[in-house]
Length: 351
Ligand code: F6P
Image (cartoon, rainbow, N blue to C red; front, side, top):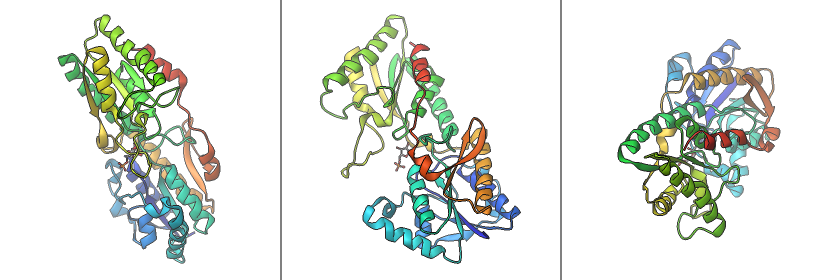
C-alpha cells in the first residue's frame, strides 16, 4: 500500500488534528504518501484531496477542530443514495488511494465498513466528544470536552452560589450520558439526569406522564428540597441532551435537547430560582488536553501501521491504557455501557 487517504467525519473533536499529524509521520516512515481528504466523505465523493506534507501538519496537534474540516455526508445516511455514493467514492480512489483512515463516530464507521466491503480498505479511529463508542474506553476529544464542561460549570457555580440559584445545565453527548455523569461528579452536581440507569424521557412540552412525574418528584424535587433544608443555597442539575428525545421533522434526534422545560418544572415545584444553561458548541472546540493529544497520536500512528501491513476493516481503540484494534463489524455490535457504580457515586457525593 503506497497511497493512503485520511478524513475526519461527523462532529469535530479536539485531538483529531493530532491523529492526522501522527499519521503523516507514520506514513512517511513507511514510504507511504498520505492524502488529506476535505470535509469527510464528501471530499471522497467529490475527489477533493491533497497530499499532506510535514509542513502542513506542523503544530496542529495543539489546535482544536480539524484542519481537514468535517461534514455529515447526507447520501451515506439515505438508503436510496447510499450505494451509488459508495460506488462513486471507490471509483474516485481507483489507482490513487489504496487505503483510508476514517476518524469519526460509529455512523462514520458504517461508511468505512461499506467502503471496505466494496474494495477500499479502511481503518477507523474513534473521534467524538460523546465517548459513545462501545469498543473503546475513550474516544478522541472526550477528555477535552469533559474538562471544558468542568471549567464552564465551575464558572456557572460561582454565579449560582452568589444568586442562590438552581442551574439546570444541559450537556452534549447525543445518546450517551458520559459527559453528563462525569461532568456532574467533577463539579459536585446536586443531581445528574441521564437516559442510562432507568433514566427517563422528559417531555419538551405538555404534561409529564405519571411515571415520569413520579421519577421527577422522587429524584429531582425531593433532592433539591433536601439540599435546601440542609442549608445549601445553590444547585447544579446536570441533564443529558438526550433525555428530552427532541426530534426534527424527519424524526431524527435534534440538538440541543429541551432542558428548558425541565428547568421550568423544577423551578415551579421547588420555588427555586431555576435557570437553564445549554452549554452548547463550546464543548466541541478548544485546545486538546494532553490525554487527547497522546491518545490521538498513538491511534494515528497505529492506524497507518495496520494499513501498511494490509490489515483493514478495523477500529483502533484504547482499552486498559493499551492501544489495540477490533473488527468493525464486531465493534458496532458491542453494547455501550455506563458505570452503574459511578452513577450511584454521583448521587452519594453531593447534596
Ligand atoms: O456528536 C457530537 C455532538 O456534538 C453531539 O454531542 C450532539 O448531539 C451533536 O454532535 C450536535 O450535532 P450538530 O453539530 O450537527 O448540531
